[in-house]
Image (cartoon, rainbow, N blue to C red; front, side):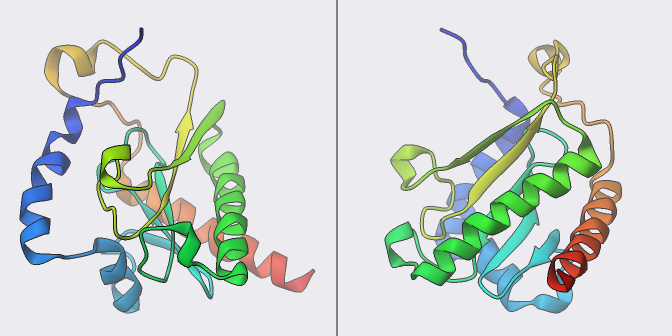
Length: 172
């Protein structure tokens, strides 16, 4: 059995008790504060979905794609919201392929806290770019994850390409 261990996410895990006290949804905060897109790491929005960079990434370019609607289940989304969500996941992968040039992706959704959802009341897809050899000894010996680009640099590249490609999609 292989074990996925990410000690650099301890800060995120420890924040659960703090967030639970205030019942704060960081996705809803990003949805409701559109002028704070960069501060909230929002790289793209549609009529029904939002794309954010993960503040505690497993890898560089780790994105979260979520419906704008605050819900913990796919069943609460209407057909248009669901289709938009999946189309936004696909579009996000396209942008990541161009900007990050990964060798593959992990794409998934955790529904419910026991399934691993850190934010069980607002579903979201994780899109994690993967590269051959993207694990290293450094995370094992020093609780550190090596990411080759800064969050700010990745944010600028992703948000710019989302805008450019979105314009191309609307013209066709």
